[in-house]
Every structure is written in C-alpha cells, then in structure tokens.
Length: 448
Ligand SMILES: NC(=O)c1ccc[n+]([C@@H]2O[C@H](COP(=O)([O-])OP(=O)(O)OC[C@H]3O[C@@H](n4cnc5c(N)ncnc54)[C@H](O)[C@@H]3O)[C@@H](O)[C@H]2O)c1
Image (cartoon, rainbow, N blue to C red; front, top):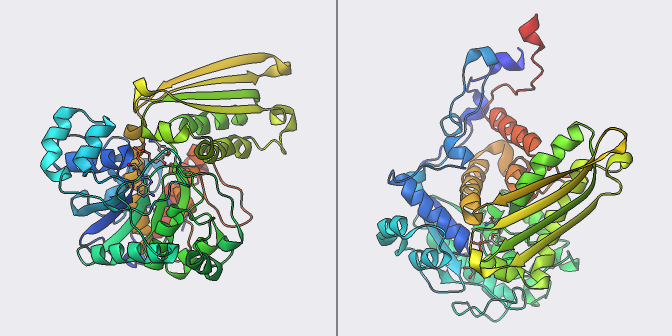
C-alpha cells in the first residue's frame, strides 16, 4: 500500500499509545516571565478569554493521505495529547513571589488580563529552589534549599517530585529558569556513576540545572530545557533518560532572532546565494536580559545562537558560498524595553557572479509571548513521547528540534536546524506513531 493510501487510518501502532487520561502535572523550574506567561495563558485559554496563538499543538493541523483527500485534522484531535483542562502547574523559584506577583513583575501580560486570572495565579507558589550564585552571577536568591551536598539537594528535588506525583497522574519538568554560566562537559558527565559520585563530591561542573534534570530523569519524568545551559546534553544524563524511559530534547527556545535565521538561511542556501556576513544584535530589558549581561551567561547563549548557521550552510559542501561567512551576535541589556525585545540583523549576501546585496531584518518582538506556546508544546509532546512505546526509551526526541535553538541528536549526527525540515520531521513522527502514511511530497501519483 502506498504511504498516501494509508493516511488517516489509526493502526495497531496508535492503539499502543497510552491514553492521556487524568491530570498532567507540569513542574516548571523558574517561575519568571516565560513560565508565568505560559501558565497565565493556559488559564486564559481554558476560560475562553484568549486563543492559544503560536501553539502548534492547539492550533496546528496535520494532513493525512493525499492532497485530494481533504483530510487535515487538528493535531490535538489526531494524537492523544493532554487536554489543557487537565494541566496542573507547580514549580520552583529563587524568589518566593507567587505566579501572579511574578507575572505582574514581568509586565508581559496587561493588568486587565492578569486581574481576571489573579485568584488562580495566586494559588501557585514556588517551592524553594536549588541555586548557587556561582552559576548565575546577576541573581541573589532568597528562596533556596540548603543541603549537605549536591546529592542532598537532588534528593530534596526528588522528594518534591514524589509529593507532586501523589496529586496528579503524570509529570513533566521544564527548565524556564535563568541562563547559567558556560560549562563544558567534564569527566563527571561521562557516565551515570561518575555523575552520582560528582553529586556526592559537590563537583563544580554540576550546575543546578543538572541537579533538577537528574532528579527528573531519575524519577522517569521527561525533561525539557528552555535555556542554553549544558544540562542534559551529556552522556550521563542521556544514559539516564534512556534507562528510565524519561524523554529529553534539545535546549534553548527558538523564538525570535534564531527563529528568523533558521527560516532565511535555508532559503539562501536553497537558491545557492552566498552569504559573507551576518550581524545580529538585540536590545532587551527584562530579567533574562540582565542575566545575559554577565559575560559568562552570555557565552552560554552565544554558543547556542551561533551554531545554527554553520549547520544550515554546510560550508564544507559549499566553500564558494559560505566559507568566508563572518557571523557576529550581540545582546545588550537595555531596561526601558522590558520584555519587548528588538532585534536587528544585517545580512550581506552575494549573487550571480559574486555581486553583493544586503538584507535588513528588524524584529520588534515580545520575548515571552513567543516562548510561552513553545514551552507548552514541549510539555505536551514530551508527555506524549512518554506514553508512546516507540519513543519513550530512545532518550533524545530529535523530532522536537523544531522548537529549539540547539537541537540534540544521537552521537555522530549533525543537528537539523532548517525550520521546515524540522516541521516535516515533527509531523512525520506524529504520523509514524499513529500508523499513518508518511508524507514525502513526491506527488507523482497525481499525474499517473
Ligand atoms: N523568552 C524567550 O524568547 C527565550 C528564548 C530562549 C530562551 N529563553 C530562556 O528561558 C529562560 C527564562 O526566560 P525568562 O525571560 O522567563 O527569564 P526570567 O529571568 O524572567 O525568569 C527566570 C526565572 O528563573 C528563576 N531562577 C533562576 N535560577 C533558578 C534556579 N536555579 N532554580 C529555580 N529558579 C531559578 C529566576 O528567579 C527567574 O524568576 C532564560 O534562561 C532564557 O534565556 C527565553
């Protein structure tokens, strides 16, 4: 049977996916601008106050079968995703503000919206966090756990997870906390045993984000990373993810400038246009901007933002077009703009016979408005992966690269950054787990 003909039929594969019944507990590390915009947004959508714009799981459709079949259900009607009404939120923060207070401080959503949601948002109060200022220089935490060792702190997070698990049916964890300093994989990240020894010995290469991730994966809880920290991008935690059937994906929400980059760069490459320079700069005035003003946290972000162009352009395959590319990224903390980031890109391209041209992109965006639906989708899709036999024990969910600046892949594979390849990969993964035919876009059958 051709792949097109199978489209839409739910087969044996689909029936093996556990249903999304009961409550899905969402544990958010860091109840700042992104997290509170996601939580408040979910509540606003539940009450019919607003639409979940920007969320593929809530608004996206998926074509099944031939173009002539006219069969494009909503993704949420095709795969068994948790319903927004079944989401229960909790989290940790280094400040004791409840979600209403934190959202009011972040100034992303207007007071009219926040006031309507206040009674609900006030009920979500952060648990004390695992925090050490060595890893985020610009913050001074007041609502933090104390422990004899990093092992002790990990056990306290595990206790938090176990207590929450008693109140819900399934749990997913997502890091929406600040960007930590740049850390490279070390000996302690080589295996689960080395990592656990490192927890006992307070190894400096184990940052708080790794402690949360270790706790989640130890408990079989899927973990997403919205920041560019190393976190689960190590042998030890990948192994733990596989061992405990706790799915992970890449890192760093792909929201503004990198989102645009991974749309434009594939277009230049598809047309064989050369690029000699790409200068990207941002002004940003929220707490994230303040943290990124520290050179060590900026370095973590810079590495994450730099990667995409090299992989998309493949200068080793196209030396005449991309070998000389000069790529520079700047983030400037500028308080007056708050969460309303402004990004400029100057792109120096060249065409036929080497003649130069320029493109300017000026994106006046809202950081957390772009990130919130991504955080929500990652939570819902990781929960789906956990319930799907063919996905739950593979560790890295490469099909979720669509949402991330730094996709994670199996060893030896280069990451796919092109947004449209990522989108195709995501949708074909959904078709695959549901036993529907993959869409190859070949389409010759229409001309038989
Ligand atoms: N908004 C975007 O477009 C976007 C895109 C990509 C990545 N990110 C990343 O997402 C993260 C969140 O962004 P934001 O704008 O919400 O930042 P934010 O500063 O408003 O929120 C981060 C929160 O994390 C808390 N925190 C810091 N360390 C913690 C710890 N160890 N444990 C618990 N809580 C901790 C802080 O107190 C703060 O409330 C940042 O790392 C940012 O770089 C954001």
